[in-house]
Length: 211
Image 1 (spheres, rainbow, N blue to C red):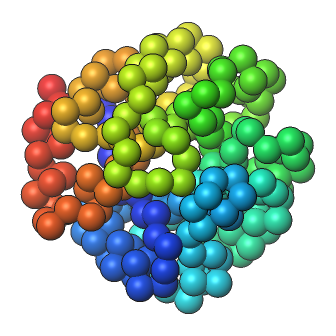
Image 2: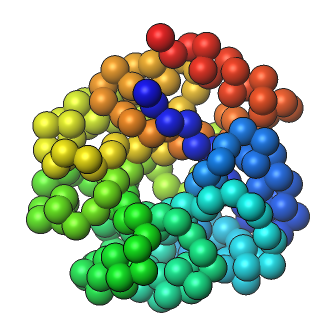
Image 3: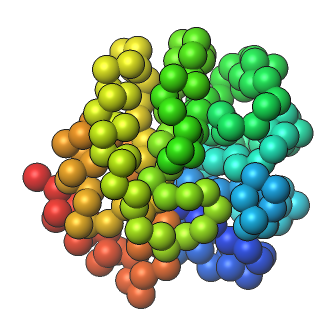
């Protein structure tokens, strides 16, 4: 059974408050995008805002930053349940992975649309989840890049047992079933769900599209 997680990408504290509240209506876990303005041109709210705005929902952080190691310690202190590390920065991830594992957090690894699966290397054995971006990082409301379906199918043959495949970006009721058929276990849905007029009805529509 596929898991649907509402995703928040907020540029201001007010946006974060509104989106977090709406996401809480449709998910027990919320995917929070954290972008530093360098990994992508977008600059989202930082950890200061996230610390200030409380929620009872479980949070997974999707880091789209050039130095993920600078965030990991604070995310552990803030009580995040999963941290998704970006593969693209040149900074080695082994130290961050070790800290997260020591703190018993779930660990994800994200790949931009243009990043080949071969770049994962031996990190398959170090993580609990692979997150494939269906759109270019840092901007909500984009249409999904069609190559992601084949990428999911290829990834299914590479992941060890128990490692989940998440797709983040561009997910709608029009492509959700195709993503699941390709092998996705988790769908992170941002603007199409969280920013809709009625997130609950929108979630029902997405669920109805799944066989």
